[in-house]
Image (cartoon, rainbow, N blue to C red; front, side):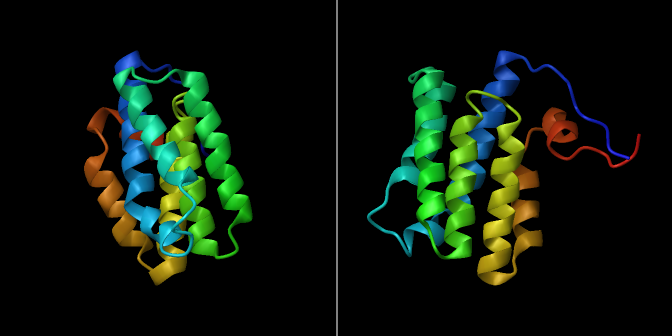
Amino acid sequence: MATKNTRQFTEQEHRLLAVWAADCAEHVLPYFEAIYPKDDRPRKAILAARLWERGDLAMLQARKAAFAAHAAARAATQPAARAAARAAGHAAAAAHVAGHARYAAAYAVKAAEINDDAAEAESDWQGNRLPERLRPFVFPSSRD
């Protein structure tokens, strides 16, 4: 049985998770933008995560961008595009709560899987970019 991870992050780790989540979301963003090229809410959410990580945007502004990306996801009718927009929303939300980073990654994998059945390749891509010390948080063991 999996246990809930209640680990507290340093500010640096929190920021690393947010930028990693932004990388994951940006990697699948073309699934959204190919269908909705005029809707920039997911792209703005990814940018918000990056700006927050650098200290150039307040957490509340990043959170607002997250809500906008989730609204874009709700409006999307194509499943891969919807998942990609959700990934972007969770990337921006990682500024508020670091735990959103894992959801950004999960939605990115879902977008890849829906689009072209490349979920394993997407997971590998993500794993190669995640700092080693953060792996237990993002990929927790299923054992106690």
